[in-house]
Image 1 (cartoon, one colour):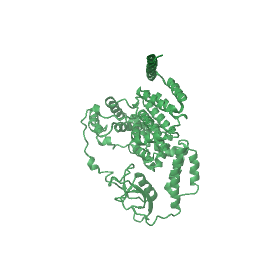
Image 2 (cartoon, rainbow, N blue to C red):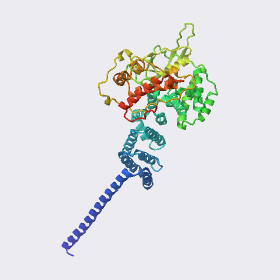
Image 3 (cartoon, one colour):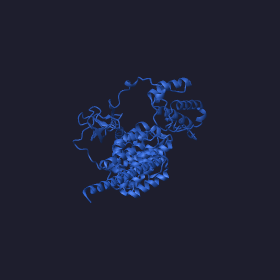
Image 4 (tube, one colour):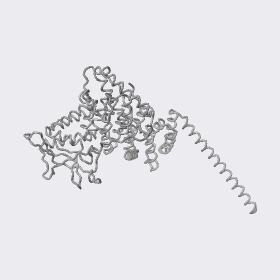
Amino acid sequence: MNTNDWNTLIDFRLFEVKKVFNELEQSYKESQWENELLWQVLMEFGDEHIWKKIFLAITETYGDRSFPILLKRLEGLLTYGKHAIAYAGLRYLLTNDNKHDLSDLECVSLGSIIEAMFTVVSEDYEDQERMIIDLTDWLRQAEDTLLRKTVHTLLSQHHKMLNRTITDTNSPKAILAFLHTLLLYDLDVPLKNAVSDLLDTEWPFLDADIDEKEFARFLWICAYFSMDNVLLQAATDSGRFLHESQIPEIILYKAYSETMTQRIFSKNSLEKMTLLLSQWKLFNEREKDKLKEKIVQGLQSLQEASAGTAAPNNMKRANEIWQIKNKTSHCPHCKQNQLVEQRFLVDGFGKKAVQTPRQIHQLLLTCGQCERVYAYDRMKLEMNKALEPLRCKVDLDPIEYPSNKSKTNIKIMKEPLSSVRNDQFRWPSTEVQESDGHSDRDGNFREETPLHRLGYRITGLNRGQRWDVLVHRAIPAIALKEIAYTIARNVRLRKSQTGGRAKFSYAIGEWEHDLKRLKQEYYKSNFTWPSY
């Protein structure tokens, strides 16, 4: 063959090869399009049973390469609003085959998926509660896998948002699940802030719905930060479990609290408490170890005190102690300075001059720049316990607790009623069992609530006048959540008294009328409405 013939043959062969490649490319595009179309159909119409088979097939086929594929499908499911199916897929991320370290892109993707699932709002309160509990359960399972670092970072960055979202459900189960998760991941600062927020603002909305085991779990988590006394002061309903319950968690708390109050250490105290701790069923082993550290530290400090350990000669005396809020970590006066813990000598004061002076050394907070000494509320309670029958002198810090004189003017809302923000929360129930005898909660009825101070009352006002107070005074100044819970609490307290339903039938009827109208004009169907 001459040169021209060879060139012609080569060109022909190249043309054939190019044609084959074009056909392959077209076939690939068509198959890829068909593949994506199939995934879209599955996203739209596939149920949980089908998707579980798909997730299993992905993990078995791709092994340790299945992680990014699963993430992509979970993102697609969330886009289509298939949240329950997406949660089922999360479980497959915990399989033993996924042992490789996550890339930065995978970490971001997983964080976005979990954050999106936590912020889903369901019209069904029970569905939302179940979703949150399932998600926090998954986070705890992930703690013992290579996903721990990613989840830890997610919780560190978004704990405030997650805490607000979960707290707004007013579900003791969901809130406890979140607190347990923070405890397991050693996120003590976010956990402490969450507990502080809970006690400062949310506890009245939970108190009546707490059961015995939930109370025990809340109590020990608070005790971990020495906030148990704050909880017990707020627990007007659930506090009865402290005296009635016989579960080992409560028995141990009472033994530990009594020992610390009496400040008498005996050698067998730790052994007895360790035995009770081994009987716990409400905390896992990691959580029990952390709580045991708290108990041991308390008993050791008591042992040192009972052995006559004297305060160091150079220990400073706290002449002025200022009370600050539980979540304050920087000096209110110097702003940027981090508060540090330091032991101080604290004097006890009595009303009678004949009382014997007493002095203790207490761990407090101080600022390295201005040298002010601060105490949280729990520290104040600890000092007063140790000094009984004397008391310590602690003043409210003027910056943390400004004078009420500056808060006397109430701003009137100018926005239309439809623009009032309706925070998501579980609407309070007004149903309660009537007591057999004289109600022991009569004394807990507080007429001087913020709502009452604004002029809301049954006596002397008709329905129109009360509604005017609610619309033009209460709603601009108080959250809808607090208004609803205050009215519902009034109803529950009256119904719980012997013969209360009949005796206070008028007031109960008026309160429930106001609740019904609040529902009609402000309710956004994002929490469970009470039955009454």
